[in-house]
Amino acid sequence: MQKKITKPIVYVDMDGVIADFDKNVHLLGERDPARGECACPPEYFFDLDLFEGAQEALHELSKHYEVYILSTPQWKNVLSWTEKVRWIQKHFSELLHKRLILSHDKTLLKGDYLIDDRIQDGAFGTFEGEHIHFGSDKFPDWKAVLNYLTPREKRFIKVV
Image (cartoon, rainbow, N blue to C red; front, side):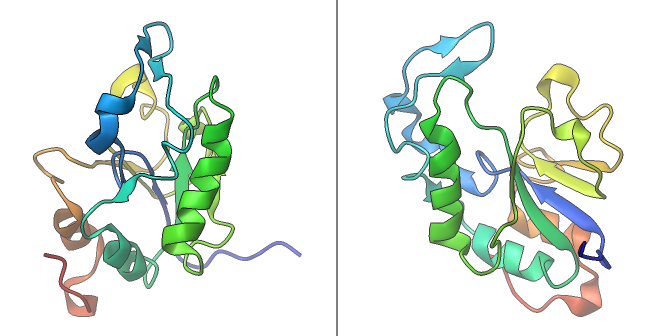
């Protein structure tokens, strides 16, 4: 039996939005210029730090939205697929249980919002919902995202 979705859908990118991908960027090898991929050492994705405010923000968003993580794994690094699952289990085990979607084309999914730090490659031009550009002037952090997506009278937490 298929689950009926009753709340709007929010997709949240992992790297650069809830996981601090750039903190240990000095550990990465050179990027493949054709694909923009880099050679990450083993367990790079699993060891990423959580962005400040991300955990609280996803808990708050889940009160109002169906929240899914939508992440692009590295094609040349098969460990990245497993490490992303392990990372979500480590930081969001109950909240995001079976809510991780790994895809190289985020425009294939239907939803209301996509919170992502990337805008290149025209990937969001055909996404039917609204792209929230995390890290931009309008949405520099999780506090700004919550102020935009959460009704003022229903805010329960304070993200510093």
